[in-house]
Length: 441
Ligand code: ADP
Image (cartoon, rainbow, N blue to C red):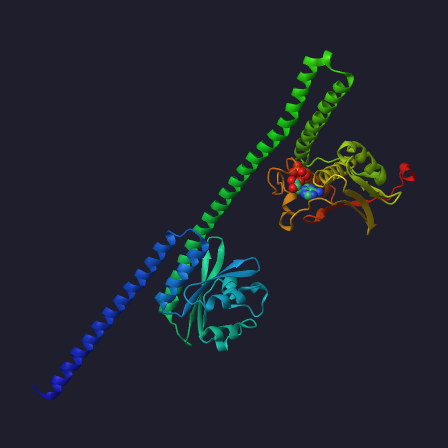
């Protein structure tokens, strides 16, 4: 055999071996890719929340494709929420880029993908005109090329899977194919996770509603039970001992019965008001003389306010255009609270200030005040500020009712308060342009 035929044979054998090895290597790589895809799918199918699903997909995608990192971006209002797979340095950069992403020009690659629904291949970020700060951010994270694949949910493009590479021109058809597969996986996981989160939210709302119902039943039962016990007790006492009692005692017991009955009537009024306001029923507006209105509410509350100093500062002839029952109810509830939550002897001031076609009424007390984080919550139904069992009784309905009346009149109500120093509740009313007869008072 000639030497050249030996060389030729060796060449053929080497070529055959090379082809065989390469086929084997490609098969192994394909198997690895499928395995990675399967692992990712398995992990996300047992992960219920959006964050776990998207970081898992991003991590597996980066690993399978051989990228430096992968970042999933999904829409959240005008921002993009970002989920990075591997590199801790990339996440904060992605977070910054995601802020107000839909308002930036030129747009971020993810925004382009979400608008067009097509993949975007950036071979070299240095040649890509992104929004201000985009190139610097890539430089800081050591990113040179980016492959972006749309995450298509049933309702449209929900986000974008970005694969970041540390060298330019780092990807080809294989990487693009894999990126699309992972983006599809992210879409599946995302839809499942969103459904799960909605279910959780609904469940939490139901639990809150249930807790609220229990609180309401216990608060109302307590509020009914206490005056009823007194009414029953004093009536029995009166019936059994009528002949032995002197007039003074009889009068005192009857007075107590009347006071407790009044409290019960107040509670029934509150509950009726809640129903009425829920049904959207509120009477019409009419010109009201503010000083007279305040005077009539003060008369109603004569007993509750007798241990406080009352100061009224309302310019004479101030007329508002408002619903009388609504206005009285708001004032009534605010003054009842001012008396309830401030010590005897302290000052309660009622003021009215006119500006820009509105009258701002305020009820100011020197009471226990309300912590900053509770100042909004106290306008929610049945909410009572946390201060143990020792505080005054109540149902948590007074302020929500006042708020609903104010809103039904197209106005606002709010509180400013400092714990330990006192509270000022204010609400606005439309300034009236009529001159009512009583305005001369
Ligand atoms: P209630 O007084 O029956 O509890 P409200 O809706 O009138 O219900 O008030 C809700 C909560 O707001 C009260 O439980 C109380 O903690 C707080 N609050 C209301 N008014 C005042 C006030 N003037 N000073 C301090 N706390 C107040």
